[in-house]
Image 1 (cartoon, rainbow, N blue to C red):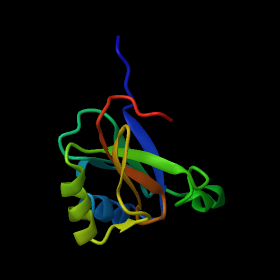
Image 2: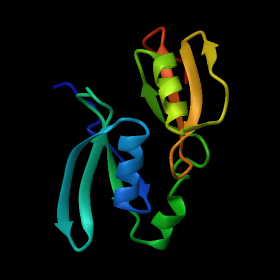
Image 3: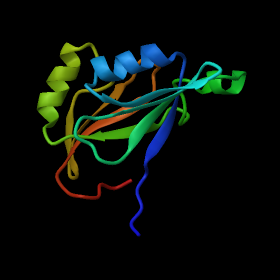
Amino acid sequence: MPQHLGAVTLVVRDYDEARDWYVGKLGFEVVEDSDLGGGKRWLLVAPPGTGSTRLLLAKATSPAQTAAIGNQTGGRVFLFLNTDDFWRDHRLYLARGVQFHEEPRVEAYGTVAVFEDLYGNLWDLLQLTRPNPPA
């Protein structure tokens, strides 16, 4: 049986602000938003048209989780958002106020630029020219 990552947890400050940012700025879709009781929600978002990995937006509930907001990987790029049209999405994200940390660059594996989400987590916007870029 083939495997895939179904979801990746992203610790957030507030469910609604996180949902609104990912939907409004990146154009993600809400896959599910279910009340679990006790102030918890199961809030999954995903890029449009994706059939696999989703983001579980999980509200921080402890001091350790709150401290991880925006720095889940110790300052490294956290997630890689692949696109079939880098320049279309780059222009759209700039127009929507997404903050990029660098100018786009063309590498042997594709076109890429680092941006940050509303909490400061780093992402690569990436259009691959070959299937498996180097780590």
